[in-house]
Length: 224
View 1 (cartoon, helix red, strand yellow):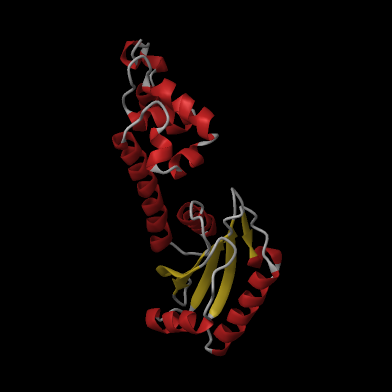
View 2 (cartoon, rainbow, N blue to C red):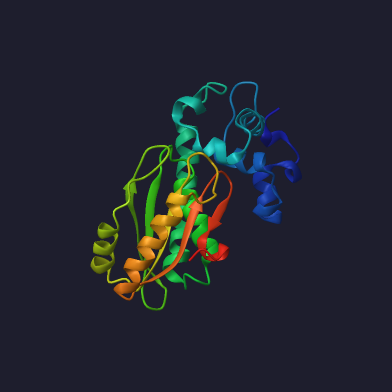
């Protein structure tokens, strides 16, 4: 039976319109993105199978085209629809950060960073550059590394600070291992950067490490 033959109260789109998106299950939200099913399976059936196979919505979104297409013979169109939805979410978070006070929107900052980094198979060291009122100026990915480490050059970070005219920064990088605990190398480079920035009167507000479904804040841990 097609979804259009279901009672209206059970159809994902109609439920969303009547009660809001928060009431829908992960599978129902995904079904709305997929739009249509395949022979013998509704979009909701496919959504449930995708969640069973990959284990979570996040892992579905992070799957590449080949991995995604192996499930039920799904093609690139549905893959593109999901990736477009992911990018819209990232851009919405970016807009919230750009238009607000960064310290007041720290949770949005963390969500934004998590959405940017969690699928990278290698370390990426980045920086949020802020003005003297801690408002967003720009975000830049600065250094890239192997699965174990990224080579950090504080001199290049300072150059970017001058280029953006930043008065404060938030550092961030991911741990592809999934563990968000700071290593001794993380602590060492953070203190080195903090010392250098203090000389040029730029505040290091935080260093955030992104792991598998978790984040560690140096500021919250009292490590700055």
